[in-house]
Image (cartoon, rainbow, N blue to C red; front, side, top):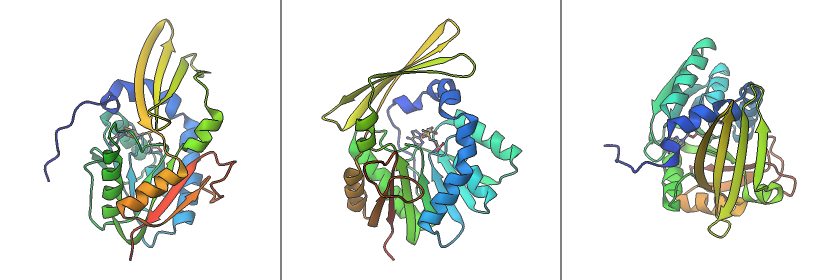
Length: 254
Ligand SMILES: C[S@@+](CC[C@H](N)C(=O)[O-])C[C@H]1O[C@@H](n2cnc3c(N)ncnc32)[C@H](O)[C@@H]1O
C-alpha cells in the first residue's frame, strides 16, 4: 500500500529527538529495559516469539527482547533514533528488523504474538481519529488471541504531579526547562522545553493527548480489542491511587 503524504508535525523534527536524547534516554533508562521487558512478557504471556516494538526509539526494549530470544520488528519514524538503535544493537549483537515508518502506516496482518507501545509513545496526533488508526493497526498486526500493551503516563497520575515548570540539570551541565499547560478541557498537554547548553538555548514546542485509564480502555474497546485490562505498573499492580504509570493490555479475539 502507498504511504500517504502527511503534513509536518512536531515529532517530525529530528533535532527535537537529537537534542533531547541525553535527557530522554540516559543509560539508566536503557538499563531498566531488561527488567521492564521481563515484566511485560510475564504480564502478557505471548504464545510465541514474534514481537512488534512500535515507536521503538533508540531500541531500548527491542534490544532487551532480542537478548531474551524474541524475534523483534522495531518501527519508528525518526531516522536519527533508528541510527542510534542500530548502533546499540550492533554492540549488543542483537538481530532486529528495523523499519522506518509512521505508526499510522505500519500494519503486518496477524503476524505478531505481542505488540508493545512503551514509554508514552501514544497520543501524539491532533486528531484522535489517528490514535484510533494506530490502535486498529496494532490490533490488525497481532495474531488471534495475542496481546497489545500500551505503557504511558496516565491522566490520573499527571493530575497528581502536575507542575507548570520543572527544571533538570543533566550530568554534562545542560539544563532542561520543561513548561507545561493543560488545554482542550484536560484532554491534551502543551509543552515547551528549553535546552540550555553552555550559552545556547534551543526551544521545542509539542503537545499530545493525555488519557485516563477509562478513556484508553474505551478507545481500545472501540478499536476492537477484547478483555482490556489496566495496571499501575509492569509488575501488574492495580491501576489505583498509587499508580505511577498507566498500562493497558488488550487482546485480539480468538
Ligand atoms: C518517548 S519515545 C519512546 C521510545 C521507546 N518506545 C522507548 O521505550 O524508549 C517516542 C518515540 O516515538 C517515535 N514517534 C513519534 N511519532 C511517531 C510516529 N508518528 N510514528 C512512528 N514513531 C513515532 C519517536 O521517534 C520516538 O522514538
